[in-house]
Picture 1 (cartoon, each protein chain N blue to C red):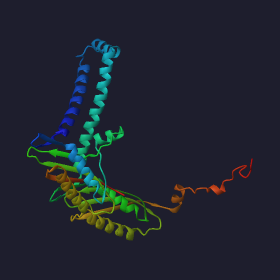
Picture 2 (cartoon, each protein chain N blue to C red):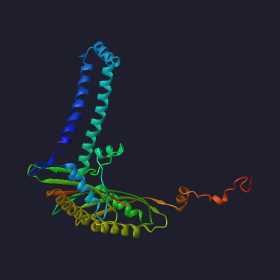
Picture 3 (cartoon, rainbow over the protein chains, first blue to last red):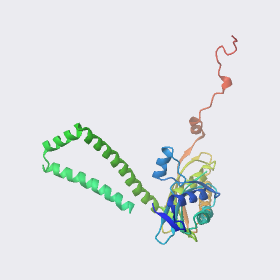
Picture 4 (cartoon, rainbow over the protein chains, first blue to last red):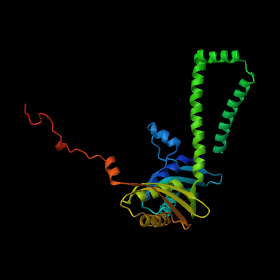
Length: 117
Length: 199
């Protein structure tokens, strides 16, 4: 997994993609209407062995031009307007990642995988 | 990339099995040679360990490959729209979830299943429902069609036409309902022997 680099006077600061994924994960859960974030094979396995991840199946792809694309697969609560929830997630994740890492995500792809109560 | 690797994995495995089968059929492999090598694998502790670990690795690889391939198939079944910050995709199973939950809220429906397909004409929904006997079917199905198309347009913000086809598979009687839920005997009705005795 690639990391985001930033130079300071004292040396190089690297932000791992997992950090961006965790920030996005926590920001997404704060949005009203989001039931949960989907898990992938890796996070399910880690959860199974008791090592809980704070990124779920969130995928962060970094590009050479210091930009990142974030893919957020999630389950929406029943009764909420899905385009509104997706838009709120995109805005919330964008702000959270910008505040935490000073990086501006190129795009935030929201994938609605299901509806739950 | 991942999908290509997964397909390559299965291609290599099947090609290997196929080659072995052909070689076996044309007597290209010496049987005694195979038996000798298998015997070595069976008896030697180090080789047994390597074989066992390779087995575990192959099982994990096959699960990962199948996960990638099926994930790719699932990815294709989506409704997508764009926002200023990026794309939003909604899987058709999410639409099916919503319809099922909506249907389960209606007292007239006992059971409902929905299959959603995204076509060029719009969204095609096929529902299979089990209704309760006292339901007026023409009125109720028309109401259900309106309700589903309205709710999907409201929740997903889709402007495309929504076609709802309803198939009433069964009409459940109240007797069936009572069969499925046997009456619970209250605790007070059960007589416990010697319950009033004090020692």
